[in-house]
Amino acid sequence: MQLKNLFADEDAVSPVIGVILMVAITVILAAVIGAFVLGIGGSQDQAPQASFQWSSSGTAVVHSGGDALDSTNLGQSTASDGCDNPGSAPGVVSDTNIQAGENVLNDVGGCGSATIVWSSPSSDSTNIIGELNR
Image: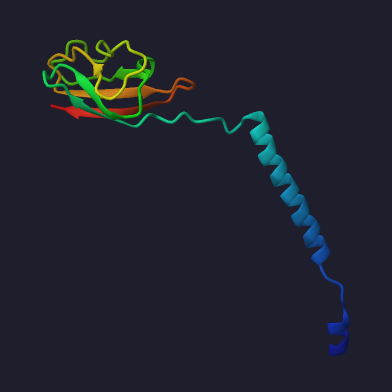
């Protein structure tokens, strides 16, 4: 074999690699578009960002700032010993649009802590958006 013929030979695998890459890009693009069209990715509800504090009387939790809250998506998780109804949400206010400065939980009773839980309206996911200790 002569060295001159080696450099003159123009046979290569570039066309094969090019076709494979084009097919791969087409398949990936079709999968992404299909996922959007079929809604496989789904949408995630974002938990509201809010801060809370105990009221001056110590028997209520006040929304002290952040996003407005919908009380239908709020609950109180299991509280510490001494609570009136541990594990339930007896004190969540009924106002559906809780703004800063309004009570979120009423009649917390003798609880030493309160945990406010937000439930997604479109799925079974929950997030703790506030934890308070006295």
